[in-house]
Image (tube, rainbow, N blue to C red; front, side, top):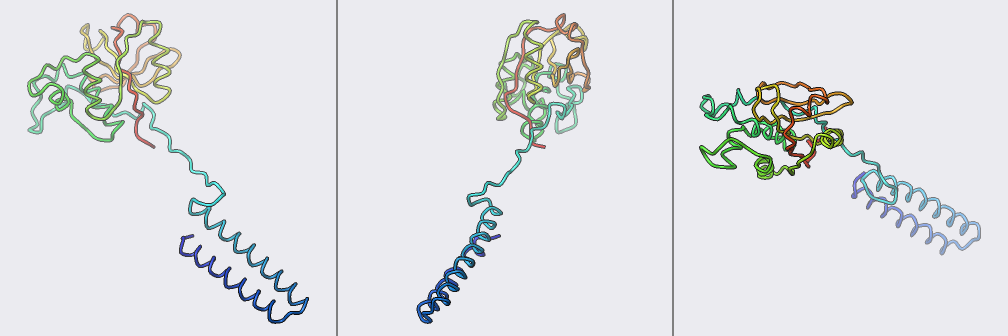
Length: 238
């Protein structure tokens, strides 16, 4: 109900009470006094009940109204982008597509956390200018994300610590980038985007092939370079 209706009800209460009090004063009989008093009390109680309902329905009053908090999107909802298919507005390939793995990971994160698509090439230019070096370390990825209003920080974790850290982060809806010499693209340092860890596997998005895949937790240690970028910003709401 609106505030306008609540005001009208309040005015009606005053009118009822004034009328009943007037009857009480002018008639003077004990019966009339008792009836006037009872009717006044009943009118005020009913009006207060209605006013309380009005206030609760509009979010005010003494009765709290429950409002469920919308959940964050899970990390599995991240988009899947590929550095091999990144193109310029003209439709031509970028000159540094083969080294834009870190920027492509950031592009996926920004889309998931901010709801906008920023191509990997534009992120590299944003960081280093046109023709800038596409090879990115953890601090460079943190800087790229910060320029797009996504909080993140770099971490160096040993093999034993990395798995539990990644598991807690992704369970909380926070993705992370990880550097290593993974099987694809084959022996060179390459950024992956991790979105989940269970009791036996690490699940990731590979920007080289634009695919979701996984590695056994035991195999992870043999490829990891122990460099991580942990995203501190949750993804969008459901």
